[in-house]
Length: 364
Image (cartoon, rainbow, N blue to C red):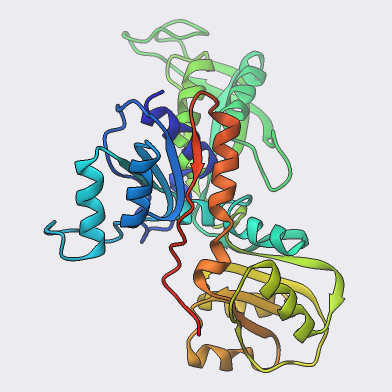
């Protein structure tokens, strides 16, 4: 198996189109045509992780955080990023990062976070904007079902928990072909009025090429009439953070002790207790201060995240309990999820979970 074949599975798990614009995801180092010998999955691809890959004969590292986040103008080994790049290239080890592509997935980082806490009735906290498009096309009634099914197979027509969604209306289409035309119905230079079905479906924007290919393959017309629109609708299945419910309400102090145990946190910084029981819980793995107001508006009793600053805790306004459990801690189970996913997809060589702890934060 080549590295590019493993990448295909990784992109099925976490499409790169889901990633935030500021992020640097995908294959960061290496040649996708290289034959894979073994995969090492980690949280951060640091030097000690590259050494672990060498020792375990893995030439492909899949990490959560990208080791290269911004541009490198020089590679001299003066810092930890450059040293990783040099060592990986020297030992012909490829590195691939998933980061916010998996953050935004409904089964990704924040669902893993929720599952670790036993939360139910989960849904996206901050749905991803500007991600839905709409396709409108027209065809004869005899061709409508075939076109619709092809669009559905390509990924169009999914709305929340529903698939194969479309709107269909009848009308009259007109056209007249020139001397170079080859019309399916009628003759050249003939004005044709024909019954047509208007088909409308929505889709995630990264599927556009695939959907248009399906449309052109199954449409009977020589010239396919279609329109694509950007929609302002929020995507219910893609976005950052998640909100869910505890099976049984807890008082705030007991809940934080519960979180500390389940998330293996060595310390939790939190805002003043509100005095209200905890039932509805919002989470956002990694840095999540930007979503405090979203958590409050969603009616959460507590918001679990990381990297909160001093003044962020004032934003609780006695409406919500804010808790910073640590960046690494809030995302730590993601690597286990990636390993489990790949082991189900790839059976012919080792998928190894890194044993290195790459959390840079230590506690007294």
